[in-house]
Length: 306
Ligand code: GLN
Image 1: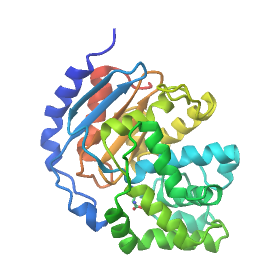
Image 2 (image 1 turned 180 degrees about the horizontal axis):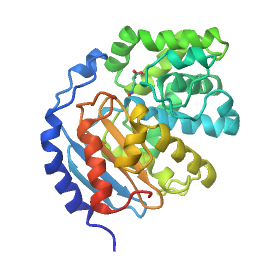
Image 3 (image 1 turned 90 degrees about the vertical axis):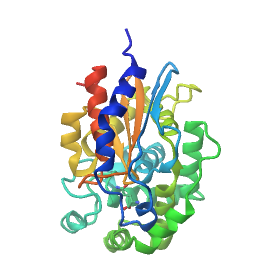
Image 4 (image 1 turned 90 degrees about the horizontal axis):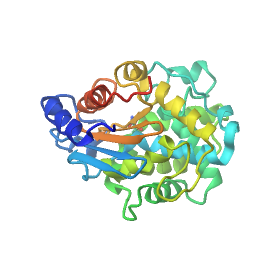
């Protein structure tokens, strides 16, 4: 019998409510610093089309690094295994915006879910599409079924003005010959992808193909082979929540991708996708209440991958 997801989500929302007051919004991007702290939403979408939600699950927020999952899917579709010549697939054990490993590893980022790796992936998209950020936006509209999903241009320009670390990373990788596109074009595309605003319901729907061995359940469209979907899910599990990925695997036990907007999307292979949002972040840049909500979710529903 399927777990009672409505009851589980309601219990989680009340359990984690005190945590939504803690944590810190991502103030290094000025327009994200303005997002009120005490907010929480969570949505579950099953492969057979059932939907459950609690709190502000329909409220759009800045998806930030969650975009890296969808950009990677597009680039993997374009390059296949050749992609791994440009970006690795090992956990970094370092913060998502760290530069230190790049020097030691000749400009090849450890994985596609840290910023350096996402810049390498965006570089692939810039070379294979007319407009890389529009390719990601249209992909997300198609997957979520929400045609009005948009960039938040204020967030993108706020990050462009303050994103010196990302600019440094892009130039540094280019100095190793690992970036082909002009750095300004690359950064503009990356910041726009990160600025896309979506709700928990939309993101959970968009991630369903990963839970479904690469096929979008609503349309039957195959985006990835079952083997490719398995591989992306593996990299999500080991690298999707930055240097807290080990702790997430221990506590939650699901492939998951977080973003500094406070969202986390996760998949239960063969069953469902779940997305949680609460803007207060922990020291690693993952949503504090969101991480706890997912930990409680897999505990109460008994459905982690382990
Ligand atoms: N746009 C953010 C950055 O590049 C994304 C980081 C994140 O969500 N971890 O810093």
